[in-house]
Length: 332
Length: 288
Image (cartoon, rainbow over all chains, first blue to last red; front, top):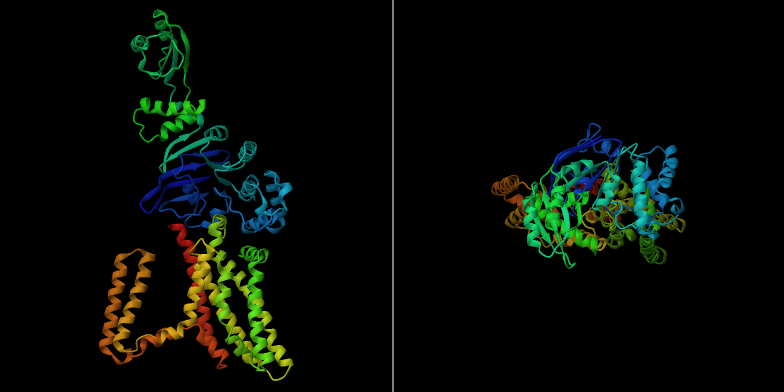
C-alpha cells in the first residue's frame, strides 16, 4: 500500500502540488488525470523519491520516503516521462545494470531480466544499442527497467505518449497484465485510455485532487442532466416558449443548426426528473415533429473538462461552452 | 556502487573520451620524457613530471565534463535517484571510475623510471614518490571537475569552467604575489574573504539572520585581533592563501625531492571536500 500524505511542493512562488493526499491499494490500476502542468509529474517524482517535497510525506508499507528512502525505493518501479536510458549501452547491458542497481541477487538476475524482456516484447532487441532504437522500443526498454524484479508499486508517467496506436494498445495490455499483483499508478491526458484501463481515477488540477473514484462513480457524480433536441419548425421562439413551460426543465438554449426548417436546443433538466414524455406531447401540440431527442451522456472526458474548467461556477452555462468545443473537435 | 562504477568505466571506453584522455596524457608525458630523460640524459623522472602538470589542466576537464552533466541532460539521474542506492554511492562510483581511467596513463608513466634505471643511474624513490603526488593531484582535479559537472547540464560549460578553475589553481602562487602585504591590506582582504564565505553560507541556508550574525562576529574578530596584534597581520594574507597552493606540494616532490606527507594529506582532504560538495549539489537539486 502506498499512502500520500498532505504533499506540498513549491517551486519559488509557484505551488506545483497543493496538499495532495490519497492512498493506493494492491490489485488496482490508478489513473492520474489532469491537464498539462497540473502537478502529475511532480507528484510522481516525489512519490518515487526523485524530488523532495516542501512538506508532506509518502508512506510505503509503513516506511517514509524521507526517513528510509532506500527501503521505500525497493518497492517502487518508475518510468519517468522521458525514459531514463543510457544510449551507449545495449538493451541487455542496460537491464543488467538496472538489475544490479536494484540489488536483485546475482542468481536471479538473468531470469528476472528474461521475464521483463518477455513482458515488454523486447526479445529481438536485447543485443541492440539503445541509441539505435525507435521511440516505441525505447519506451518499452524504459518500461522493462520499471517492472524489472516486479516491484510492488509500478509508477508510469504518461507511458503511451508518442507511440503509434498499435504500441499504445500493447502498453495498455501490459498495464492490465500487471493489475493482479501490483499497484499500478499511471498518468495520462488521454481520457479514453484512463477510462479503459483504470479501476480508480484521480483528477488533479493546479496541484489539487479534484475528484477521486472509479470511472462509474465519477460519472454518477456529474449526473446526466442535459438533453439534446432537434425539431422541424420555422420559429425557434415559439418552440422555446413551449419548452420553458414544461415542468422539470431549468433552461433551454438554442444552438445553431445549419439545416433549413430545423431548430436545435440544449435543454437542462432538473436532476431526478425525466420530462421527455412532456416534451414529446408539447411538440406534438405545436405540430413540430421531433427529429432527435437524446440524453447527453457525460463521458469521463466531459467530467474531466467540467471539473478542470477554471471558471466553473454553475455546472450549466460553462459546461455547455466546454461541450461545444468538444462537438467541434469531433466533427472536424 | 559497484554497478555505477562498472557502468561508468565502460562508458568511457564505449565512447572516444577514455581513449582520447589516455592518449593525450601518455603522449605529452612521453614527449617530455623523451626530451628530458632519453635524449637530454637527465636521470630524474620526477623533474619531468613536475614540468608536465599543465597537461592535467587540459585533460582532466575532458574526463570529468560529462560525469554528472550527462545524467541531467539525458534525465538518467531520474533512474539513479529513484533506485535503492544512496547519492553518496552514486557519486563515489562515478568518481572512482574516473580515477581508474586516470590511473592508466599514470601506470604507463610508472614504467619511465624503470627505463631510466635500465640505462644507468636512477632515483627510483623520488621518482615514484613524485608519481604518487602527481596521481593525488590528478585525483583532486578530478573531484573539482566532477563538482563543476554536477552544477550544469552542459558538457561544454562544465569543461570550460573546470579548465578555468584549474588554471587559477595552477597560477595560484603567482597570483598570491600580487596580494597586499601590509597589516591594513590584510584586514581588508580578510573582510572580503569573510564576506564571500558568508555569501556562500547565505545562498546555501537562505538564513539572513545567521548570515548577518556570522558577518558581524567575523568583522569584530578581525578588527579586534588587528588592534591587539597589528604585527602578526603583516604578510598574513599571502601566507594563509599561499598555503592553499596545489602545485606547491608537487613542486616539493618534483623539484626539491622532499616527501611532503602533509601535502598529500592536503590533497586528500581537498579531494574529500569536493566529493562531499558534489553529493550536496546533487541532493540540493532534489529540494529546489
